[in-house]
Length: 418
Image (tube, rainbow, N blue to C red; front, top):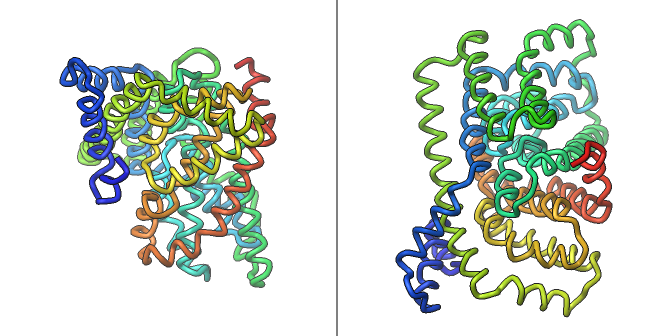
């Protein structure tokens, strides 16, 4: 699989071809039946239906003007702080994270608006693009998160518990990025470009109220027990469609068609990876690979602190080399038993895994958010890599904090009875 990926073969074919070849090498009695059966079983999951709905809702929000109103509201709230437009970029991504759950959707939506705005305010284009890219990583961490839905399917975990566990890590990441922006502006001597106006906050909030209500509808329905995550995702699509088409009047029939087309392409790619990775996972389970890895890991150390450190190091490397969805589907059944054996809660492991692999989305050579941000910002990828590394170091620091202070992420779900 790794050889094929290094040769430039698309990740889904790298996983699928390696898994199919393995079924013949192992000598399975009916490999041509096992392959389609495993793929279908991997994709045949009710919680996974939330993925295309959340993707479609994000596409419709971007085209329906919701993202722009959230940006205006964020700018009115934090634009008066030193480094204001940079803070507005982080806050905009935080607010949009409550609606989309996708880093790529936020790079495209917020980046197109905020990168030019930061450049106009005197920000270096490379840093502006790096900030837009790194703050877009809040999407897969702050609920609702597509990445956490996929992990919940792979681990048999509670989606609601994972959503709640992602709130504090996401806010810590956002706070860290805003702190970096503030001190960078302080040392450069830049001054705020606008004054705080309560009237402007109320005015922008009035225009953004429908966008700000959406997270309460999506997450409130889940945590109140009224809707499953899949049903709430479908409601999000309906809400985004009605608001974009009939209230903001920005979503035309052509836009709706293009949203459906884009969602179909993205979803088909994700589902193919899920199906191919399921073959891989079934083979690993049949050959007792997870049990062997658990024994080897425990033979090195049974200390939860060291186990978490080894898992973090592995996942940070994997995140640089592999697609997030594929890594979750393949590695969850391998690493989760080792984590549980060491006394680590599955919910904490899930947050650690999702945060690790999300950081990998902004690291070369496979960081899809990195390449999209470079395209949106109009800069060379090597310039973006040089500009983004301090922000990624900061996010790794948050990762370590979450890893070794579990109560930060687990207190909220425990308090609400998850």
